[in-house]
Image (cartoon, rainbow, N blue to C red; front, side):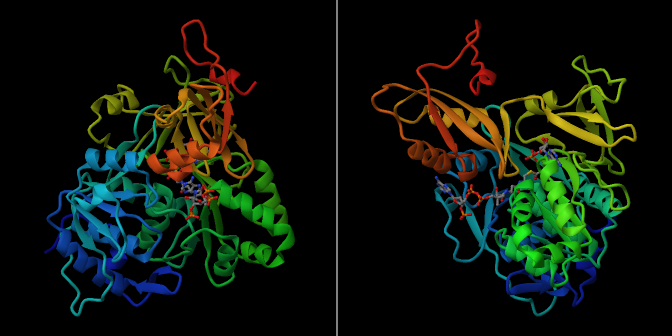
Length: 483
Ligand code: MCA
Ligand code: AMP
């Protein structure tokens, strides 16, 4: 059947013996991926929405491609997700099917759904590719933290994917010759949309490390990989390893592009990597709701501490507290963006969707920035202190506070972020115990948050206080906690 819309993955339609995906020893060519994902697509084509148990494996990549071929929206799930968060996501997104690798054991809320195993057996005859859905049809629902309450599902249409990936093609001179290496998790935009779908849209290939390691990066860059994606924690670990690892320095110096994102890469790490390798890491800036907004261009000046310039098709402005565009580039303002890269809505949350946009359709990012004279954007902070970025994960203080408050012996709880060399920020819990003689243990509190929400949301430090500092209105004064 011919389709009026161009395919999301032209190289998949063409099929070829060129490599598409590699996870450790296992790999698929474009023809093999088309066959495996095509037959899975045929079996889930009637689903309304599918949940995907997004382990860092070949199955996850095949599952997501299958759902996209079938035109069924995907909800990627962190395989280490805790009970409460999973319950919320399943209830909110109401998937009719869960996709998982054969043998993966799924927690209770998912066992109630129909399960389809992602089997990777090349079909004898390549299945017919279904017609390409329209550009506005939803491709993903990706859950992201706000300052309070449970995570919200950002609905990402197909045109946001193609717009962002094609803008990056231009900014990074990204081609089918590129071989990307990364070890990012596959349940967020960075690892999944940029890191798996990006290479597939270009007709290039990706080698996923299964889990991030400096050794894996060294090995793959020394063996033909041309690009590296990572969060700042990963580049920090690379910077730490460089002085004792000349082979790592050599591998990095041979890469075409080293890209960092999800949080700010400290200038110190930028400089350590540049002096050891002669290569500059470039940063790009994005969000779950907007996909990518800005980047340092491959043909531009790599300037540490900036996230570069707006990508093709993206409108970006800085506004002051009244919502007026700042007149002076040096004045700090909130970044607002508009363009085809944006999400359409938060699932089931018209209130939150309305609050996120201005009347004339600009999305409020909550990120504060200034601009250099030539337009390079410098992010200087976030509007809400209640959003923490740890290891590149966005974490809302409110959801952790709610989880802590349920724990026996906790009377009051506040959560903040504090600087951490490795994670960027680490989560700190401030606890007022019900009984000063019987403190809820630091380890128990961390385990509770890990089990209810997710391990990366667990507090790394716990302080016990007799009371929380409050202002006249009774509001907790978080800024004075660290003082
Ligand atoms: C530790 N663990 C626990 C507990 N404590 N499990 C249960 N209960 C506990 N109390 C487990 C962890 O699950 C993990 O398991 C291991 O112990 C170590 O965890 P941790 O120390 O937290 O992390 P790490 O291994 O040091 O990880 C650092 C990391 C990671 C690799 C940098 O933070 C990471 O992958 N970050 C990427 C974030 C990202 O992709 N963000 C994109 C969203 P195990 O050993 O089994 O692993 S932002 C985005 O998409 C936007 C669009 C953008 O701009 O990119
Ligand atoms: P998330 O909602 O998890 O997708 O995280 C998006 C947030 O990550 C943005 O609003 C920024 O605060 C932050 N972010 C992403 N990339 C960068 C970067 N290169 N520099 C600084 N902050 C970044």
